[in-house]
Length: 179
Image (cartoon, rainbow, N blue to C red; front, side, top):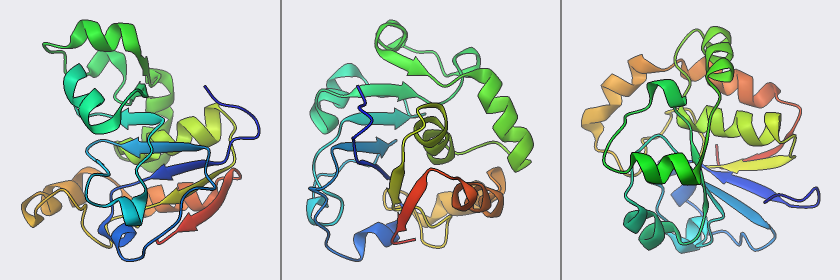
């Protein structure tokens, strides 16, 4: 799954990631979040995906269609996830973010953690990887797949300032690109 020599890039979904064309070929592992489909944006965020970290329920068909053969990380703790028609698929094929860790992050951030923050916590914390991140600007630009109608609700749901401080202070973050 991961090797100590892997160069890991976690790609968030901030519109700021789409402002500059990039060559991401130096990265050996690419992590995408939720609906961060690369289709049509490859020159900015590449096309490869090795890991999908999500709190958005996808069918197995859609995962294969948009991301290919990937490792799946379900970032909402298993006890509180939205069970549905694909529950058995996720039970058999996904890593579930630990509830204990979610509770700790919630206390640290004084708010519910975002999927992006939990993903960074997983790779930089639990897996102890040195990582770069792209497309994280903590709501300074909108998420590219949302309309502005969701922005107000999302602004109140999470503590963006605390998440930014948490990420910037993490010892395993090499570089924050475009944020």
